[in-house]
Length: 329
Image 1 (cartoon, one colour):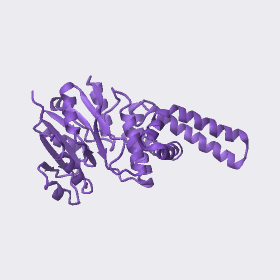
Image 2 (cartoon, helix red, strand yellow):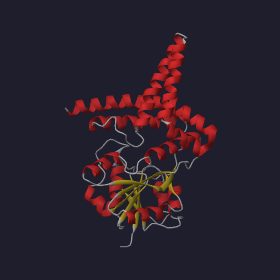
Image 3 (tube, rainbow, N blue to C red):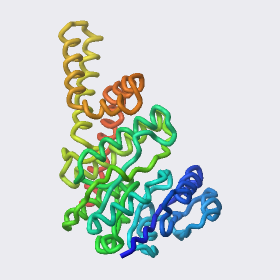
Image 4 (tube, helix red, strand yellow):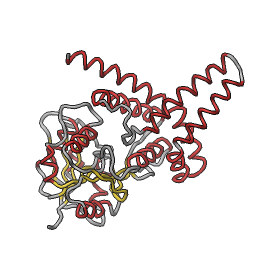
């Protein structure tokens, strides 16, 4: 059977990204069978930009979120294979061809890709995030989840799944979708050749805000799912250990300031070294992708600053879950 790949892109106020996204798709060496952009009630000029390209634009009457947009695109697709990406993702010249080859090799699987290590906007905070996600998502060939920014599957598999849940916690709808697929017996695999460049446009504030929001909703979901300590993509055991160690380091450092004593200094050094040992593979990736100066900066940011946003988000997520649980009761 000839593979006809439908690329499905949810869009909500994505005018800053959509032209770059679509230009890359229609400039690729192997163009997809069709591109469907589902606009989720954008208030900007996204639709005007989208209409410049030979793609199908579907406009939702009521805002329904990324899940609704993806489901609508899949339901209206003509291809026998679906490739979900986000509006702030930029395919590489061979991404579509690799997605098709992956599908033809594993037609009954749901196949995941990831971000390129280097972000489209190659600033420190954007590329830090891109390396972190690339490493975390591609660690295991059979992952806990596949992200919606690079997901390939047969249309028949999608239809059997029931699609993305449209009444769910934001941000991690693809995690819930993946877990539901696995529970039904569906196999998930990763293909490190399917890569898209992500436009983050992160500075320090946006980087920490992302960590906070992701942690908030992920922890609330994990508490309900009773898998809080699971090794799950970016919510890896290494990251959770990193948050724990970072908290200890800051505690001992505060003790050192209050009461200068070699014991507290030794504690800081030992915990920091132990944390580096556990997270050594990710830290190597920072150095490998961007060199020594970037690697040192990324290592310090990951071990000392980033975990504080994750921990704060986790606390907010716990409160969110408990509040929601009380309302449901």
